[in-house]
Image (cartoon, rainbow, N blue to C red; front, side, top):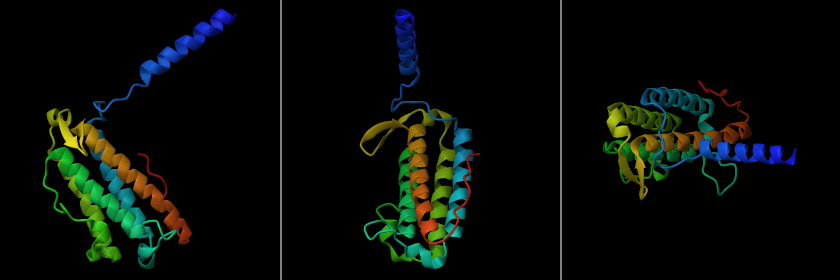
Length: 181
């Protein structure tokens, strides 16, 4: 009985180890799926931007945190930076910290630049060939394949949009419902 239990435990651990390997060269989702996910993320983020009242853009849950607008501008900045790095396309905001610019203090201007960042990613992804998706680029001093760079950009924007859920709730706004598909 003990031998059987031990054997099953070892087999389970071997199977777990064999199926859980992750590397920086991992194969990202198919480009067609990534494009669908980015379009969905753009729509979802627009719902968040639309949900926050104009006066809530400067809201910070605590003084040391980013404001709602700063969270969204940080997300946009990263979208531009990741997509430019992954695709080799010139970043239209290269060298600019969107969070610090007064140009994006209004809700309309904020929404415009954030949605522009999604269009930039989608266009960069569209212009990257399947062969290029598997090729490596230098991103944040790491060698990663382009597909993984787009995937990490997606993870980053999801993280920061998710943080703003609390901002909406604290302003008495019900956040948009989850959009997994």
